[in-house]
Image 1 (spheres, rainbow, N blue to C red):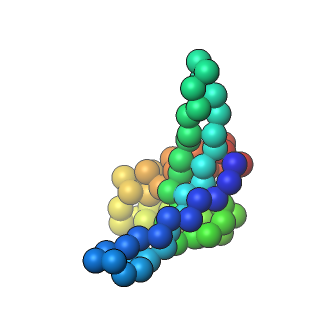
Image 2: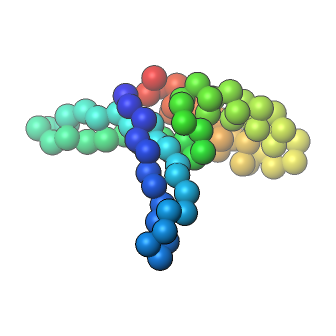
Image 3: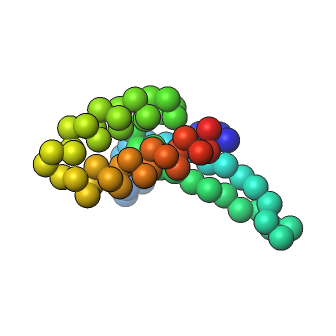
Length: 80
């Protein structure tokens, strides 16, 4: 697994940066990638720590969003 940095440009100017955790593998002779978007978090550990706090905070007010974020955390744990 590695962290991919994606720079966002708008109208030729640097607008922002976000990160992705990427795992490459072969399936039937073709290279595939499994990607988890980390957003502003530059490392998987940083994202997992922040998301754990966010899940607790969202559980009371937005339970479906908390469930989606929990699923994303599990996918990231599987990659690492």
